Length: 341
Ligand code: TLP
Image (cartoon, rainbow, N blue to C red):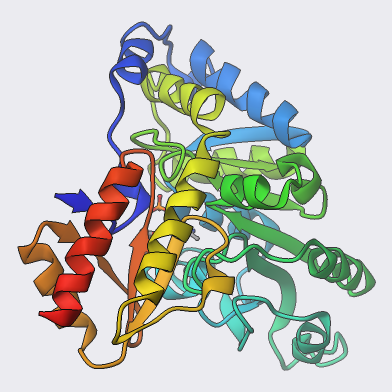
């Protein structure tokens, strides 16, 4: 099976497993796990933020940050297909009492003009209080597109003007950084809080890291425990995270090449619409024009290729660590049979 459903399906390599087996451990609830402490310190330095916290998942990372930045009743401005709104089980409302003010973005990008129109006047005590602006980089539903740095800078200026906080869902910030050449530290410098995943393109089996000022991370540490995320001898998995950053960050370039190769192959197939300009990292969205998405997914599966649904009328393919260029050639072959046969 060639599995292009997500970059979350990667399996830990033998070398990663060895590092995990040999990891030094302690009780992290006492902050005594040396490997976790090392991962957190390493990330704080890499992202040039005051502090970092290892958390079980991307969802928990985002939600801890939102929680630490807000009070119940506050409002978060984000793009309408943001992961925090569409795919996190309604947790902003459930866990933090937040409502969302959604903006229709273009390829995942919301402009300062749109955001400024959505900010509630501070005098309007009867309205929700705008507190956070959130963006996603790369943007999943938009097809892994990189958020333009000039727009990020402009959003930071706007946030400062209105005394708002800025959160980055950087589940795939690693991919954005490799594609744009902009360091993860530079991206992070514009945000109050950042959440990054180790379990996607980097290939760790589990884990995310959140970053921000000491006070915010201290607050998130407390809430992580309250939400049942206090973990014990987690050096075993934190070691995989460290290994993933050190060994699998720079190779993401290969996944981006593979996604482009797949997109080029698909663009030659009749009955497929693909916008090559949007294939900037490891996610590829394509639209079948003569078949429905479910049939494309089912027929591909019969032939040994796993794909996902990327939203309304769109198929999603994600390249990753366990996919070679040979696999991509085979995937193109399978898809041409699916569409022509
Ligand atoms: N995304 C998953 C699915 O939930 C859609 C995937 O296969 O892409 N932020 C972004 C931008 C994400 O894409 C994801 C996972 C998360 C946060 C949440 O990470 P996890 O699943 O580790 O909680």
